[in-house]
Image 1 (cartoon, rainbow, N blue to C red):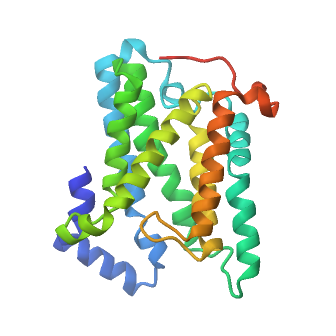
Image 2 (spheres, rainbow, N blue to C red; image 1 turned 45 degrees about the horizontal axis):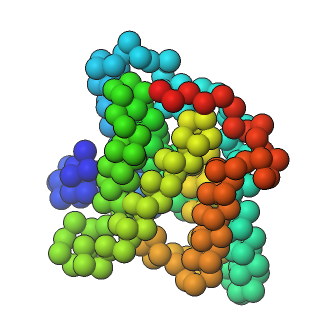
Length: 250
């Protein structure tokens, strides 16, 4: 799947399709959303295979991928976690003239991208894998995170030489997102919301390059990760024990 996503641009039919979409006036964020569509489709296929292997352990599709219960709780936790990066980014953005706070092309970066990535790399590769096949959580989280990091760099010698920091950053972020979902009662909405808001905050800092940003962005991100980690370990400190719910270890 990842090989196909990375090299589909070399396929003549794919090139022709993108030329046609450009000729009819479709914006770039729509044309490039095929990556998210492929992640969704491949995720469905993988989930079906997991159900065939471990169907006797299923709690139902939505429960298996962490979307059955606690939707509002998951969103609320994700929003609170991202308060530092949003506040620092807002101040930083207001200090810069011409800062773009939102544009249509951000739909892919801030919404469809995080949803598709969390669905596949955390919902299917981690939560469903653990619950349906009995894979150890940390094994699934690390493998999923490495694959998550791999899709963020070019698969060339130059791309790997320049992009290995992005693999480390996105890979570590992938493990953290999976851990957040597990800590908050296997709720996929927590990493989805956090991923969306962190991506949306990027332009407020002047943008990010290969998952790495300015010193201000890294400060905001570090503060968010610290807050999210403390919250996940002890939600009672923030009066958010209500959001934990009952744990289902799979």
